[in-house]
Length: 462
Image (cartoon, rainbow, N blue to C red; front, side, top):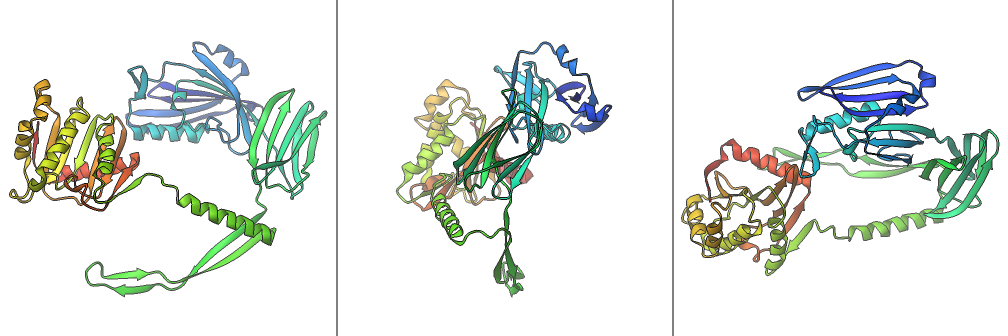
């Protein structure tokens, strides 16, 4: 049996055993070291006796079962299934995890954690990204490889089958099972042909040994033809410009060429497939993913529902970027928003608003905004109950064009981009874009650098 151990700062992160490989390897000692952060990350591999698993103790519970091909916890590539026994320990490595509020969280930066995951994947084959709680556990694998290939369009050939084996193959065409074959193998068989009764384009296969499932793979398909769609692009043209750039390059016209390698597809079948795909793709394009919402004049409530959902969400910090947030002609609009912000997440101590004020006759500065808030008849009730609202104002040197609301909770970010200012949400045509975690984090990271690069000229807190 092969043993893999990964340690970090001298602490075991994960132990993995692979059964059945040592007969070919006999002796093996591999050690790989990489420094992540302050500590060394070490992978070690060696041959150990099969009965070493009998010494495993102290685990809380055990999972076991057959992993299909390409499952997250399956460390093997290709057409290999794996029977897994996972010994689960609740005490996780404290060099990478900390426990708080009855759950584990990362103790190290996410970038370092990702690098550790890549290292584990590279040397053990285990993709741990979706199962980080595998750290601290012991995993035992027994692999089963499926050896089979297509017999042109007739069926498949399965190889190296032992006695007392059952093979079940379901041939599939257009997501329908068109033929099922069950074969009992009573003696060792080097090659077994299994032929479909009808045309098929993929198949499922299950192999049982002594009535126990040892191999399964679904939707197995084979390349029967390759269609190469090539675009041949003509010479580009350069157009001289005055203001934007010195010149702009316009790509040349393209012509398409199609080349098919392998079996030609039936003309009527090709028409059917292309039409089905084209219409289905057109329908898919019409599905609203709700990530971009268009707002028309008079749809203030529609915009407010989206924005207040963000303001009322569970966050540690929130940043509002609106260059015209303190426009004095719309101060009553803004004070309404300040009332909403104040009451939406009353426990938050980290509400940040960044704005631009070039002309004090047209917009209020930090001190004026704080005085307005202190005198507001609704907000004053909140101030009576708490020492501070936790609202921070930042006056910037220059305006940014787009408006953003970015929230963060731990390492998770979310937000929206708004195509107009808070003081004109019901007056213009614009879009509200719902931002993903990555987009929100990237926007916040760039704006944070911009703010810290001397672009804050005044700040205050209430």
